[in-house]
Image 1 (cartoon, one colour):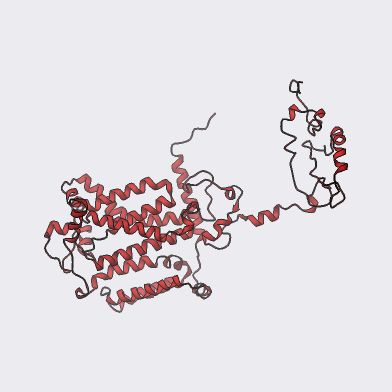
Image 2 (cartoon, rainbow, N blue to C red; image 1 turned 180 degrees about the vertical axis):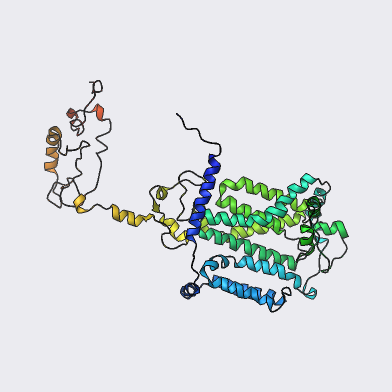
Length: 481
């Protein structure tokens, strides 16, 4: 009776893959709490010129911590102290070291509110709408906000006000579960530096958003003005809350319209998921497209801001993407994760190393875990244990498929005698091409393939037929001349 698969089987299989991937990811974690391990790793680390970037992070953190007024001194000293402790403990350092660019961005964004006005450039309120009209022939964001509806408000709020804050964590979790460690580090590095550069551009080139034009027109702006939730105020009214009004009113960067980091983050997430999880390409780019529209519909960005953020993300993705991840290696799973055949969550077919439970030597350096990371045999170990010993050596000249039949049929031996006699002797005295059963190197072989090809059409009169004298031939299947 054929087996009827349940419609919930794919969902159950997906959850099973996620559980197995989570167990494997936890097994890969460094669970040590000893700071001496971190210090030993630091002593043995081979420093390169790329490590000098941490000097920049140290200087950047010192600058913004000095300007920070809330929390005030000495409470704000707890930030560098706790961060240093997190770097010293191996269990936490494996997360905090790769995330250093992300923390540097958050610190810069938050402390920018404390920068004195005398240090800041003047705010532009006409640059973005003018550029939009010149480049696109009209104020696109103004056109998109002329008609509003509660359904459209919800459709714009979900990607802009909910998914935007959760999607970076989702990307990081999936990379941690289903891809090699360097891909997660690549995501943290690219995401952090892109947002850090975006914030620095917003500080150096302050521009007002469309909501400012709707409220104040093109009148000059100053840094004492509060922010506005724009179209998200309708979401607060719909849910009888004030979370978005409070958050955007007290935003550290009120005049940070260009570039749109909402659009930049969505674009970068779309690039990463479509590159490392090709099966998610259509869904993630659909999300990005809706978010592009939502930024303008909610009066938080002009179209030029969206284009600027998307271009920034594109540049950072291809600038940071290493050559080894530009091919099939981007789909390589962690070394201790094998979800079986088929594409599954991993989205790839099993290669020969997966099929025979071997470690892929090409992924050893790529995964960056050190050691084997599992119980699989390496290719070198497999070759070693597969080498036959002297006790296993046997004659490969003829091997009958019938147990006990180890000699040539008389006809074959007689027909081959002239050729064997005329062959030059080998190293062990036997004719060349004939291996001794007790000396020299041998191999384990099955019956000759040549003896199996169209065997039912051959007979002893054809010159040789090792299988003719061993295999019984059924009635009616013999050779017909």
